[in-house]
Structures are given as structure tokens and as C-alpha cells.
Image 1 (tube, rainbow, N blue to C red):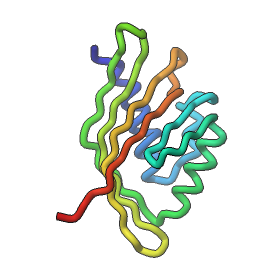
Image 2: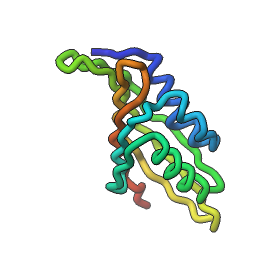
Image 3: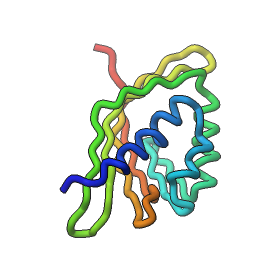
Length: 130
């Protein structure tokens, strides 16, 4: 069933807008200390401090990151009694060398009982030139 729209707003701001604006210190406001992230590059990151370190290092390689959110949907799993946020987005990154990289993302975020994200599954596909 449909979930809490406040959780969707939290993930959009923290997971996408703060990435775009390079405000990653805000991760502490909405992520659990025990978060586990399964990234699209097959890297698994455990713990908030490790996520922050890794994401800050990745974002520091970019001069800009522009995000287009295609769809955001909060859902509630009635069998497991869990809140999730589903996001489909496109990200256009510009590296320090001026190279532009575009990818489409599908992310699945779990929100724990304290209202913080504690699990992320991230999948992406590089956009192909037609």
C-alpha cells in the first residue's frame, strides 16, 4: 500500500538534492548509523561513517551533478510492516576533466522504525547514445 510521503521527501532531499548541492554532511540527519548500501557498482558499504566517507570522495571528483527525478513513491509492506521509498531518476555528472556521464537510477530505500534510512539498493544504467 502507499507509504508515508514524509519519508519520500526525506530521501529526495537527503539522497538526491543534497548530493546535487554537495551537502553530504546532512546524511547524519536521516540515515541510520547502521545503514547498509548496495551500490550500483556492486560495492557494499556498511555504516554511516563509511557511507559518508565513500560518497564524499565520489562527489569530490565531480564539478557538478544534475538530477532529474522521474518518479518517487513511498510504499508500506503490509506483510513485513516496513516502510520503503522507491525512486527513479536521471543523473548527469561532470567530472573535473569536463567529461559528462549520464545514468538512469532505480533506488529502493528502507526506512526503519525510528524514521531513518537503514538500507539502500541502488541500480543504474548508463544512457546509450542513439
